[in-house]
Length: 469
Ligand code: BG6
Image (cartoon, rainbow, N blue to C red):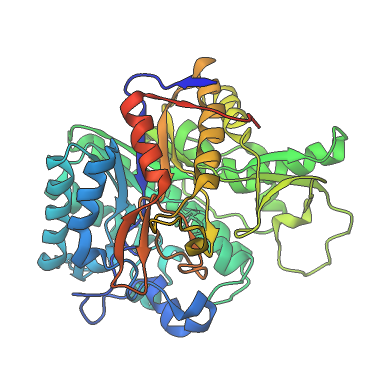
């Protein structure tokens, strides 16, 4: 079946600063929260690899630009590393060496006709601000982030047309303070909700600065809403799914897009003593400074059922009070990543957006297939024959385009990732790239089969779909 792609549909790829750059040129004191975690617990990172080397992007970015040009992607998303952008975060003294690298990167992208999408924080909050203010626990950090954004807009706003405040603003605090599976392993659900809130507030402040600054282009945020599927149509399972959606999805989407929090979420926060006590002035700021667009990361479905057990008195709150995970018998799995594969999430996401946020333009900001031991898939010429990735992308694109046909405001699809890159904990275990990075051979880049396929999709504005899922 031939699937056509609408004109001007974004076909791009994404990554982040910390997952590619490496520490070459990083000055003392410029650690991010993540860098510090890597230093504290290198053993949790697969084979001890982490942000220190990443893909050596600082030295090798020109190689990647050449490959982007060869494949023909329309957009590339990465972040500015906040922890490296300054030598003094409070007096806002810019690190000119690092800032010129960003200049060169942006100019290089524009020169080959690739639109940069620039994110201001992809977990790169400076460690110094964590030590001094406990990072996003503090309104001081919210203000410093807004000032950082203003400087960045002044410097690059003439060339960058698409900005995002955060990538997946819920993730760090969920892993660190709610689930406590990552350093500093503190169970503190009130802090979890406060960080959620402060990132919403920071976004509103940055949106205001951007709009009042009269820059061309637009400002958004990248959220990872999980499509939640209840086990059954029973009221208990429906309640579990609705509450999951409130705590993990609508907690960002509603205030950032609609300008206010869902009442039920506020009630649940109060009931569970994790309310974040906003001022009237802050709520007014959030209500009037909303996103121009939203990027959505989408990988797997979230299946839930009602919680069978009563919550223990005095136990730290967790949204699991209201749900349990449910595993659908017969589900298809990405065994490397442990994520279910269910391409229909893309169509269901379109319906979700139409139903809840019909006016805002959005695009898929990440979707992709992480594969372990990818070197085993080399063909005789040495190219990685990643047909599984081609199948994964085509299935997801197909369902996304079904949504577009039915009127969703989806503008495009960005693959995670352009090259293989480092992930939190998994490091280089699961490879995601169109471009392979040879760790044994000076990080040499080479195109995978999926890169040639993606190039042909872009050139032909269409692809063949086999075995629709
Ligand atoms: C997204 C993140 O959640 O998923 C990326 O924005 C991350 O930073 C990607 O790398 C893939 O997840 P993982 O853990 O397999 O790398």
